[in-house]
Amino acid sequence: MSDTPWELLPTASNHAASLDGLYVFLTIICGISFVLVIGAMVYFMVKYKKRSDNDKTSPLTHNGKLEFGWSAVPAVFLMLFFVWGELDFVKLSAPPADAIDIRVTGQKWYWTIEYPGRPVAATTAALDGEVAPLLIVPLNQPVRLLMTSKDVIHSFYIPAFRVKKDVVPGRYASVWFTAIQEGTFPVFCTEYCGDEHSSMLAIVKVVPPDQYEEAVRAATTLEQGEGETVEQFGEKVYKSFACNSCHNTDSTIKVGPGFGGVFGKTETFTDGASVVVDENYIRESIYTPNAKVVAGFTPQMPSFAGQINDEQMNALIAYIKSLE
Image (cartoon, rainbow, N blue to C red; front, side, top):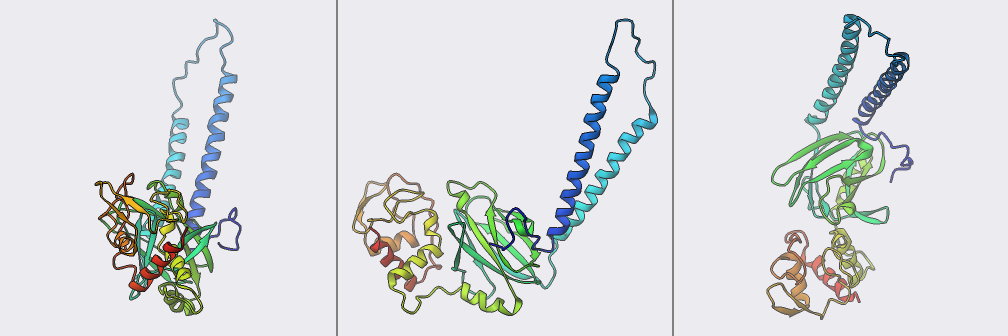
């Protein structure tokens, strides 16, 4: 997270200050309008309250100047809101030609980050106790996110940057920004997308330009570290590919079956067949998850074929075998 307290939301992108100004201006004008309208209503209710049956209604039918005023003044402010908002909308929709393109793919319930010329990012970081994908961007350089979804509608929202965009299956959406403050900032999905919608998090890390390439290289490298056991590396793979968004490490059910004690267990499938969980079954379940669906569950797990290599798969299997 940024060092700035959450209640003082940082203006960490080039869009933030203008959008904040528009919202503050809208709030002030709406507040003044509310006071004027309600105040006038209360005043006229008291002043012109009917006092007796003999009181006559005023012969005045209208006041042209007053009617023109209360129509013209709001119209001026409405046009001002429109022009200001349209300028910001156009700015948000037109990235500079030198913007860095980064692909973002949403699926239940995590984000996948892909940088130009690099493999799919696997590095994660901690956000409020949750493990989340890490998006790295350089300071003071425009970045365009080209986004799509593999399943349902998601929405990619970076509050500190004041940018939000719906991510729709079957098409591409884009949003751009220039980060103007170093630090780490949370990303949320703001379109309800199922059971684990609230845990579909990510993190934006803004780094100096001279550290960007090295940071991206580290973010897209998922290898067994020196002195790290296969099981420890497997746990890292498990978290990096957001297996924890659907599977617990004990036997309790989340979206999918729990992994605790699953190795060696006999699983029964929706077609009535059964099998003892071994290395081959785990591998098949990760690469072709809908080939055998455990009874009581629906086929909704995505395939990780082409994302998890053999070394990572072996470590992940070793980690699952170690869970009790």
